[in-house]
Structure formats: structure tokens, C-alpha cells
Image (cartoon, rainbow, N blue to C red):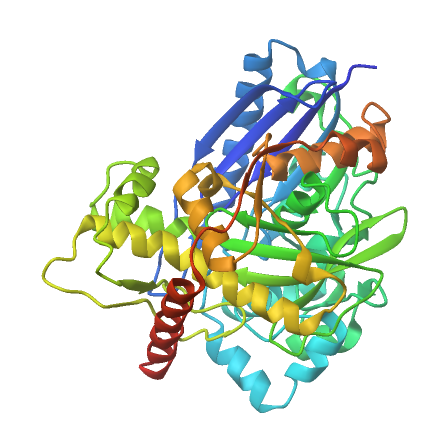
Length: 497
């Protein structure tokens, strides 16, 4: 059997498809951006049909670039933006509304109402999550309440709910398979991560009919085969994981204490805690890292909503850079005597603050502040937020995390300036891998290993290669002053809401 494996990496702002060869190297790739829809302030939507079209077109691009045919692909893996909600008709496959994106904050008041009813402890105990608009459950509840007839149709079994992976599996298999994996399910506010099952109590609170929920499978499992008419061949779908979990796998963080952080639109740090389901006391999330062969591995996670999106804002919102890759160069040339802080709470603040109502703010501006200082502030904000997460993890878990080297991936890690500043602010080494497409690689490994054409877990871990290690070089006095300024800026941002 061919060793070619196809990975679909369906992200927040674009879709990528990558064909990996038998040596786990990239043979071909395709990428396509799609619209970001903002109906109101704080609301973010996607058109599911545009997502679907982007998936099909990028797969064809990747296959063409790899100079193979669809029949040469042994397996397909899917990784996706998590928490984004799609509801569609079971009969036609047609969405009943735009997808509500993970960044969307429309259910903030509903989350506050549930908190006032003293229900957050119930949700956290069962799901490991907090009551925040970030997660899927309250978004689904909003759709059922606001799309005419949706709740009644859902109760009759006429509607399907899914995160993006489930929607894609449904479409790729022609509606034959209605399933998700344990990692995506664990982000919905409706899945009990200890019992590994949908939780009736939580469904009742959110008024979600169980009839509209997908089957939950392992990350490496049989998710059906693609219809021949779509890609020209039937390809088995054998791997599925939410993007941050797939990146954890792609970074080969299989042992307790190993940690990865992905710097894309947002930033997400996961610390493998093994079979130990650590209950955070510092507003981190407890989540399923992955589930393989029926065995669940847990993680502590810190979620930052805005990372690379701040650089996009400099480019598209302010127009002060023409391309994202220039940001590091500008930051390096910034005036060292100016301390400009950007708190990028454009869609609220994530861990460890969890303030859905906070909005972005800039502190420390002078008459001399310009594009260079803005660029540095945007990149440093990512580093400061990462430090907040690391500090919280240190407090929650004492299993050797203090000596853990951070493995990084995502679009931002190509910037040497940003990675050096990250190491400086964290006061810890940062390892950048040879293959930066670790999210897609993780999904591909799940599928390829299940198909028997790629190595097992141990063999895959041995194949991980480091491109460069960034060691901290900033003196402690400078670091402490910078962190003090950052924490003051965050405090003032939250206080001003």
C-alpha cells in the first residue's frame, strides 16, 4: 500500500490540505482563505459552504502538486478549528445558519446567567471547561433558540450538530457517517471527559436534544470513506483531532510533562498530564489531549484568543504593514526606550483571566510611537500571554513542568525575533521543529498509523526533529520590568470594562 497520507487542516481563516509521502515529508499542499463574517460587534461567523468548497479545492491542489492521483492516497486525516458550531439538515445536508466561530462572544450574557445559577462548577466538574462563549454548547443553544423551528426540528432528529470535523466527515462520506472524535467532543460543554460520553444533565441545562449529537470515536478510528465522485477515489478517513490536539500529537508530546504551544490566529498551550485528569485551580482548562485504542490521555490547556490575529489587525485593520512577515523586522527596529503594551482583547480575554467582555487596549503611547512600536507590542503581547499560561501551569501541576522545554508551531514561529523574545519572556528554552505544519502532521499520523503505512507512536516520536532551539538571553531585571508593565496593562484593561 502507498505511504501517501492526506491531511485536511481546516483553520479559522483558511483551509490547507497537505499530502505527506511515506517518509512523512510534504509532497504537495494547497491553501485557500475564506470570508470572516462579522454581523455585529463581537460576533464572528463563517459560511459552511465556503468552508466545504475550500476543502475540496485545496485537496485537489495538494494532489496535483504532489503529482499523484487520489487513488494513491492510503488514508485521510482531518484536523479543524475547534468549538466552531455548524447545524445542518439531516435530509439535505444544508446548513440552517452560518457557522458560529469559536471567537464569537454573542452568548456572553447567557454564560453569565448560567454562572448566576451557580452552574459553572457543574460544567467544570464534568467537562473540565469554564462557562465562556468560547465553547460550543452555548452557541448551539443560541442557534436552537434563534433559528425559527430549530429546536422542534432538532428534537425530531431532523437536524445534525457538529464541530467542523463532523460537518466535513458528513459531506465527504455523502451523509453516511455522523461522527466526531473525543478531542472535539471534549470542547463542547456537553461531553463528560471522565465518562467519555455525552452528559444528559448538561444537555438538559442547555436544552439540547441528544438526537442531534454525533457518535464519538477515538482519534485514530474508522470514520468512513470519501465518496468517489468528490475526489475521484474512495479514501478511508482514519484520523480526526481538533487542531490543538493534532498539534500536540504532531509535536510527539506523548509523555506526561511534554508541552507544546501553537501560534496561529490564537495561541494554545497544552501540557500532557497522562492519565491524570488535573483539576486546575488557576483558571486553566482540563481537556482530552487524545484518545487512542480506547485509552484517554489528558492535558492542561491555556487558550489565548488573539495571537497572529493581532498581526493581521496591523496589516488589515491599521494598514501599517503590507505583509505579516515584516513584523519581526519592524519590532527589532523599535525604540528600546518606549514600552508600548498591546492587550489584544479584541474578542475578550482567555486564560487565565476569562473575561468575555474585555476589549483591546494600548498603553504607553507617546508622540514618537509608530509602526515599529506597534509591531513590537503585537508580538510581545503573544509572549506575555504565554508567560501567564506557563505560570498558571506551574501552579497547577508539579510533575516536572518547570524543566519542560516548550515545543512551538504555527505561522508565527517562523519569526526568529518572536521566538527569541518568547524564550526571553518565558525564561525557558523554545524548540522549533523542522516541520512547522505539525497540526496537519498530527492528523496525518493518526490516519497513517491506523492504516498501517506510517510508524507507531514510538517510531513517530523518534522521527521528530528540531530546527532550532532559542535560549533565554534577557537579564532578569529587564524581564521583571517588562512583566510588571504587562500585568499592569491587563489589570487596567479589565478594570476599564
